[in-house]
Amino acid sequence: MGWYYLLVAAMNLFAAARTGQRGGYVRAVAWLVVGVGFGTLGATALAGRPLLMPEPWKNACDAAFGPVSFTVGTFGGLVVLYLGRRFFVIPAVAWAGLNCSLLFMGMSMTDPEFAAIVTKPDNVPIVAMVYLLAIFTWSATAQAVENDRRLARGQGPVEKDYGDKVLVWPDVVYIELIGIVIATVVLVIWSIVLKAPLEQPANPVVTPNPSKAPWYFLGLQEMLVFFDASIAGVTLPILTIIGLAAIPFLDFNKKGNGYYTIKERPFAYLVFQFGFLQLWILLILVGTLMRGPNWNFFGLYEVQDPHKVLALNNVKLSEYFWVMLLGRSVPPVPVDAGVFTQFGAILWREIAGVAALLAYFVFLPVALSRTVFRGFLRQMGYGRYTLMVLLLLMMLMLPLKMILRWTLNLSYILSIPEYFLNF
Image (cartoon, rainbow, N blue to C red; front, side, top):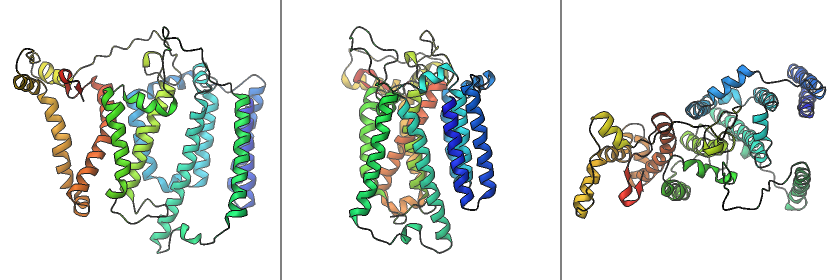
């Protein structure tokens, strides 16, 4: 950990030098102090006395990073970042947040459970992806905030000032060559420092516990915990592709083409950030860092014991309705009856699930068209509005089902195993 802190210290000293050259002497002194602090931590770590994460902090993090609190907390964090974006895009604030996250990472690496997960060769790219994603998201948001300020003053976006043209050769090719060389050097060093994540030859008798998909499929694997395989593995990916293909036909806002902006396209910005960060990146992080043996949910510092047993009961909505609410047994479905009689018995048994789905996919879009999305209906028309709101409700269904599964043990809203239909 000593070299890690020394690297962070060098990064802060470089930032202090650059900031001082630009006249920001107060910030330069601040980053100098931070760099000296990280250098001191690096020296003490090399001497065998690294800064440890206190045990009460570990217990508090494990308690705070439960399934429901983690999901709801990250959503609340996105709301805070969106509302306070003008503050968080300030370079000094962003740099301070980066230093805090690096300090947290360094202290956490002293925990053997956390270090075993983060330093696994399969997971190192995912940790790097989190930081790269944060950097690029901050850069785009800062550009959007600056453009919104310029547009409010009656000026054009920054992108319209880039009117100078350059030749592909040698300007662009020269930059691309430098990028290729840097990427090659990074990959070579990476392959030397980290061992290839190769395991033993496949054995059909022994299955790894947990058996995880590649990182780019961990989001889908996490969805399988909350939905039937036909929904998580087929329906949702197809709807994702259809939704992405339908965006150009659904979008009626002509503003924001060719430049970053948030104020002119708040709905599109919020839907994209929520769908990408909350419903995809978050699922990858959960599957990577917090899913352990038997696919149980573990805290960041919790020992991933394969013998951990969680008392989880799969309860269907029909059981909640008939047994717990009405105090009756679930109506049986006659096996030897005719098709229409059997279908009617199934509908009667699943009356609560049918009503819930009708309210969610039929009555809720109508209510939204008369309240929150009234302007969308007027500008999009009934066809485009219906497609847009149904895709949006399907996207929101994932976090809702996750919370219902973790809080109420709700397995299926509509369960018709007679026809292999579970929703």
